[in-house]
Length: 128
Image: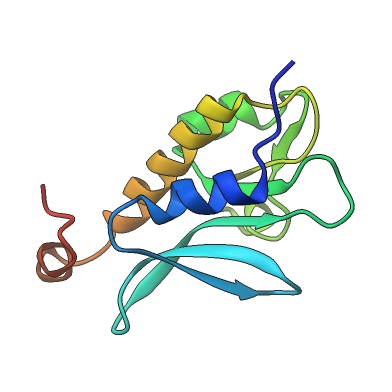
């Protein structure tokens, strides 16, 4: 059975990604964005509440969305997926392993950052 990703591990991993910064908003959710003061975009959202598993939400490719959306412990992300966006929420067992969640968080970061202009990517060190 996969081990749940705790708040400290989630925040530490997201912080390790290039040009990532943290805000707490939307009722105490730990929101991670990529960018800077001129432009930023959300790539990960997590909220723990009273649950064992956090609701960890991340952007995925359309193919990954189709693969993940019906897996036990995962679901289309509330609000985002209902608006046609490819976002998944990990919310319960069995879900994903800690390593898999980290891989999807990295991919979400990459997918979101690729929408920036070449100039901003270069400024943020994301052009490699």
